Length: 129
Image: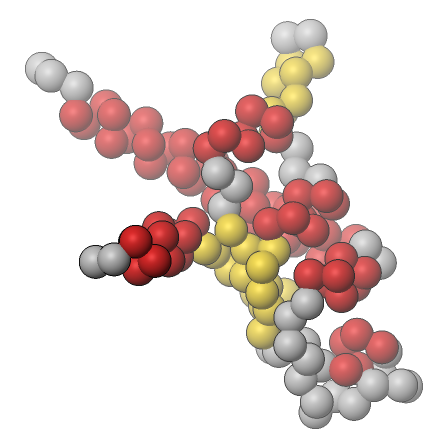
């Protein structure tokens, strides 16, 4: 496998999606492990994971099922004309919809927790007896 194919395969392993309902979904990349410490907030002895709007804007890399009506509103845009993903357009849309922010943030967080759990399981299983 050449370098480009290896890189593409590696990125696909981090790629996840979340169904937004109504025939729409977004595709995001699970944050790389190097970004995870930034997502863990510590306040005294309390630790909590936090995925912000900035993270939702950063990690989403595609969508399916978005139409002009989703982007411009049903009174202006056509509901039968799909729109290709654009990061700037995504940033504008998501910033104006708390429901989408929360759903995508939850999915990103779940992908982080799943990654950490899977990694811990592999390490546990590979420890010498």
